[in-house]
Image 1 (cartoon, rainbow, N blue to C red):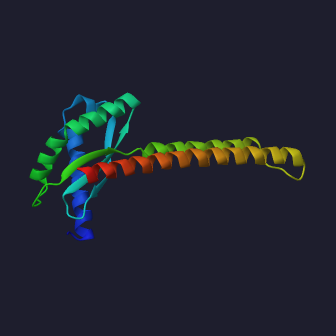
Image 2: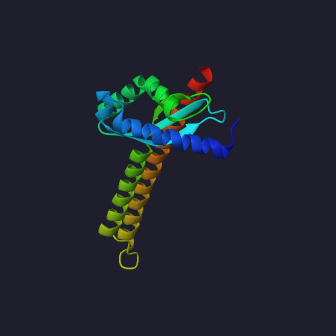
Length: 171
């Protein structure tokens, strides 16, 4: 079993090499439909498996096509990693779509909407108690909507991650 430091170094080398391959070497047109970037690499402790998290910018169809292209290029990526990264055994490669950037930008836009709403409807309880109460209710509704949406996205993410781990165990 490799040390945590070695696992982190191998993961960084894989991330760098796969990013380079995405820019220069993978010729599949489906991968080129969306802008693809490697966000993280998770390498198992025995260095036998590597989960490569990629973020794909573009439409839903472009993201699906890019992920299909990456899955079909898995063998090529693994063989190239074997030549570029000197390890006793080249890890098995799995591409996983990472939507954290989209979720983050969605949360930021919701926060900006909340801030804009607060600027347009300032809370002034001293002059008009009823308007202040209404503004507070609207803020609470926006906050609740943000919480519910974020909770739903987190639930979806954990379900997807759990499903991925089940697939790994079965294989």
